Amino acid sequence: MEILTCAACAHPLTAPLHLIAEAPDRPGYDGTKGPDGKRRPPATLPRGCYAIDPEPSGAPMVPYEGDDDSYPGAYPGGPAQLGEDGDWLVAGGPRNSYVTHPDDVVELDFHPDFARLGGCCGPAGDLGVNRVCPGCGAEAATVFGDCVGPYETHFAPDAVRAVPAADVPQADLPDPDRTAPAAGPGTG
Ligand SMILES: [Zn+2]
Ligand SMILES: [Zn+2]
Image 1 (tube, helix red, strand yellow):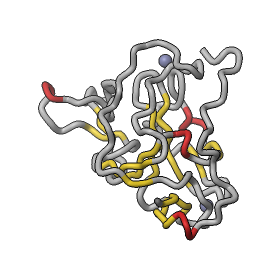
Image 2: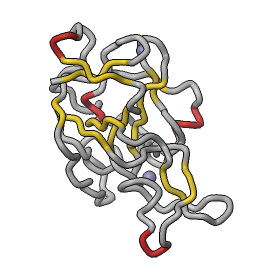
Image 3: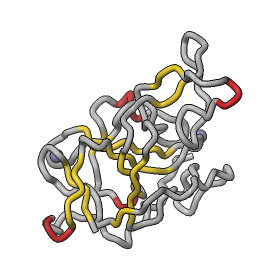
């Protein structure tokens, strides 16, 4: 078991997690509100584990260079996205991000650049890193939680370290039984 910790200040950022060889297939979204009242698909990863995503993740969005007929969408599980020049766009962010269930992450602070938090029903995740370390403010993670994409938290590989859980002070970790907070009024 490892805990992902901030590369800048060593603050623990996740619950103890075990690495799985490959993320499960993304479950897709049926358009209904989940048990928490949010419009988004179920989380891709089960609780308690993490995976390494070999594909580029998140911003910057870059022109797609493949055949139009095989355009995969702007990011895995995400929508088509057209750039200003009329090019299809795909994620050009870092490969090998660590992917977790969003509920296995400690409470991160919002990125001070609120423009990065945009989306339809939740953060789209394609506008740059959108969460920062609560210990030091370093850019830490990108939450994808919109109706048009997957429900995942991605940590850029250079933002965190995977540290044996036994070596991390356990005080600040998320409750393993935590579920997403109940929906408040007006959350769509
Ligand atoms: Zn929506
Ligand atoms: Zn930090």
